[in-house]
Structure formats: C-alpha cells, structure tokens
Length: 191
Image 1 (tube, helix red, strand yellow):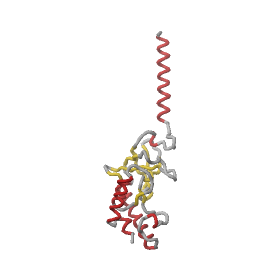
Image 2 (tube, one colour):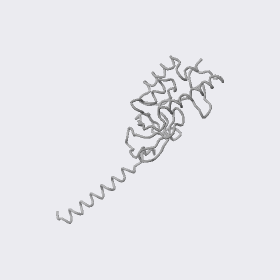
Image 3 (tube, one colour):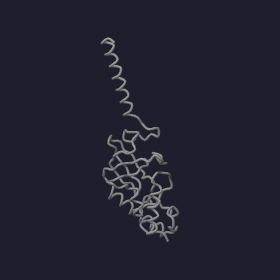
C-alpha cells in the first residue's frame, strides 16, 4: 500500500470515528429520556434542584439538562391536591382521614426537603420498570449517601407501596407492612 493510500485510509477511519463519537454522544433513548447524555446508564448522578413533594423532585444533570423524577415504587400523600383515603389501606374516608393524610403528606415533603434539597444524588433505573411514567416524569430510585430514599420513605411510614412492577417490590412490600403494623406515618391515620 502506498503512502497516499495509507494517509487516505487513516483519514477515512478518523472521520468515521469522529462521526460515530458524535452520534453516540448525542443519542436519545427510544423512550426519549436522553438521561444525562448517557442513554444506556443504569444510574446517573444529578443535583436535586427542587423538592415538589415527598415522591417527586426536579433534578439537573451534569450536562445542564433538567428533568422531573417520580420516585419509583412509592406514593406519598398529596400536598397540592386532595387525597383519596381509599389509596391508603385502613384510612377512613372521612374529613379526619383526609386531614391526617394531608398532614402526613406535609411530613413526607419535609423529610424529602431535609434529605434531598440541593444535594447530589444518584438516580438508579430499574430494568423491570419503564423509564418514564404516565405524566412524562422519569421513574427512578433516588440514592443519597448509602441509602435508597424510596425505601426510607416506606420504612418511616411516609409512603405506601405503589402498585407497579419493579425489582425491589418484595422488599418494599415488607417495609410497608412493618410500618403499617407499627402505625408509623400515614398508617397512624388508619382506624
């Protein structure tokens, strides 16, 4: 092979490599998440920019993009709209039941603010769950320090198990059961 042919081949390879690298860096998942620029990641580091409520946070990725995350597998009582006591087993559908749930929703939100606000956390994605929920929010476990915040909500009674499919479901069901049996958090509202 002559030198000019070798040079052209090298140039073609370098161009192909540059094009491929550019395409990979700008790729977006088929579900449109584009998570932190790394679409195949099982987890990614983010900064929590706002705590919406006990089970929803806004985050900023390292590349500057922002998104809303719904904590996978858990549901805290609402603070921005009315609660449905039927969603929390044993909580009476009365004004007292709704008032108790509202108070517990505020406690869950305060817990989230204390643990997550303006903190660097890791989002972990579950292979059994969709990357996005019905409202277009990312679905993830939120890990802060060495603790999965989703599980901490259940353990302390700040949340109920959300009816969906995910790998930690059995563990989360046990955490909810223990909190319910001990009347912690939302389960103190049960009659």
